[in-house]
Image (cartoon, rainbow, N blue to C red; front, side, top):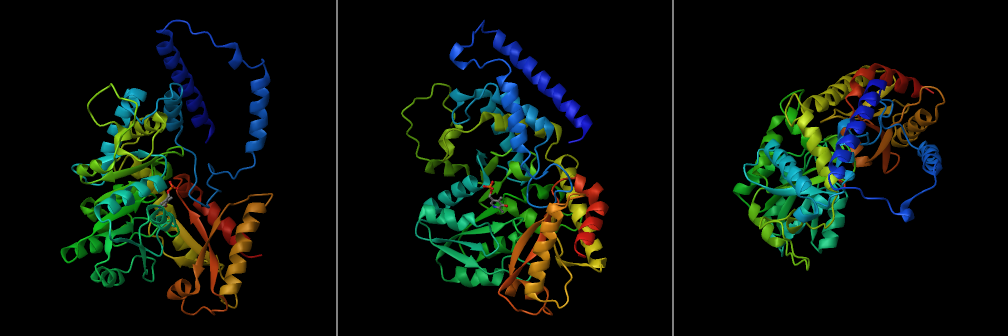
Length: 457
Ligand SMILES: *Cc1c(COP(=O)(O)O)cnc(C)c1O
């Protein structure tokens, strides 16, 4: 965060505190119990020690951090979160937080509209994993005797959650670019044992989008549910058709049965904000709800009656709602944030292709760039060593550090992209940079030069 944003955030936090005080004062004085009082000066002391402890972090906020999917929330989301947190409503039930439950409904409605759902049932969750669990739970209720298929590049938690649910799984191979192989999927569907197919719109490793439209087409011949895991990539639908992003898979998402998207990934939110959406509101019937605490607020379904989780921070809904007021789910709103990262990824992959020292692993599907130092000889073991060293040298540099991450590619995946490589081990690590901060675009020349320099040691 630069100085100006810092000053803005301070003013916004003051405003939040002042607004909160105005509201609480309407209820008369409420003295703090001595049990909660802490000695003067102690808090400041502990906060300073905390600040020391927190130095043991990577600078996720800075574009020189170009590693994993990490960045701070938008300052406005922090202000919105604080406003909610000062009251600490629980979005499990309307009685626990009528205002934030309403804010959640409004935010979720915008998410559903972004994907083109005309009707929906949905809510925020504490994470993408919980949201996927919920979608797979509903899928199992509808197809209790059938399995769930997902691609070899899908998120590892699908297998884990299917195990939790006691559902059989099938892994679908991917093509040379890491997309679900639709012919392989069809062979699997032909056997009649698959009830649900999970497609990924933006894989975690490479940011690749499965051919959702082709999977949707298979429903003309086979009966199955489609769940879209768009935890990472979902918001890219705002700029589908721009910057070389094929719009077809994105347009097909509206025909799928459920969608997961993580506002805490590309939606500028603090952690604790995933979302699940169902196309058919009737799936609400599967959440058997028999809480012994009766609700008094309304006959409307409480969020807790359509979710697997119980307590959830109302503050998350407040933060997301505030963000959407300022950066709406449009091409020029939040879409502009994603477009900057996408442009950075395209530009960087061009620079890498022209580089004498680096090689591109694969052209980026969204905003994740994968590459490796050019080695002689070009062998898996040499690339592995060079990639690991590049990451480590960047991170440990006293001057001008850069923070990258690595991705493991097995020998088959690597040779599909680089048939000329000498296969002398079962796989290799390549370097991976998620350019999810729009500032990556302005920092790109510097980043590229530094990574090139570090790869020449
Ligand atoms: C991050 C991610 C998940 C898991 O979401 P969490 O919010 O980390 O639990 C699931 N699927 C994909 C594609 C992801 O990128």
